[in-house]
Amino acid sequence: RNIVRRMTQEVTSHLKRSIEQGKQFNIALAVKSNIITSGLKYSLATGNWGDQKKAMSSTAGVSQVLNRYTFASTLSHLRRTNTPVGRDGKLAKPRQLHNTHWGLVCPAETPEGQACGLVKNLSLMCSVSVGTSTEPIIEYMISRNMEVLEEYEPQRYPNATKIFLNGSWIGVHQDPKALVKDVQQLR
Image (cartoon, rainbow, N blue to C red; front, side, top):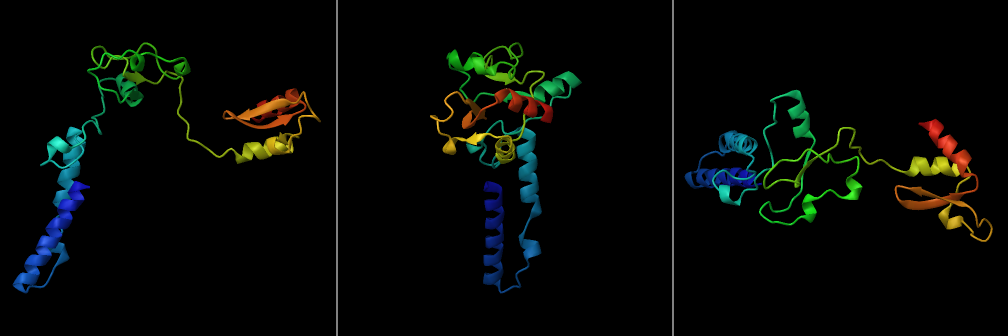
């Protein structure tokens, strides 16, 4: 943002000078492309995201140079997560693995020193997926005789099996074994 602001200030100052001197305004001369190019090169090279002249106010650690020592170290670097907690604190809770991390975070690979436990790596078989719409799944379940939660009457079917989708109760079903078999065949 600061780089673009600096470039627009250069353009406005060039416009003011050309008005004061009575010259024709030429946008090609006013826009200096090297301002944005050099700013982006500096930010990507150092990891300090912001203006080079205001290095104290820039955000550090936004970009990193990819570790290419070995193939394994490259994969490890790409699967690294960083907990945004101060490194100098002696807090133990952010450094410990939680029960919900099972199968997602590697319990062994973490750096030594101040960042121990704050920098974690995704486990070997962990894969990150992009969120998708649940509507097709709900429509499939309804076509397989699932009763939607809003239409369910507990007095009529007291022993119905609850159906949860991504942690939300969406309906009930009378024959859960057949529904499970159908869903497993879809895989």
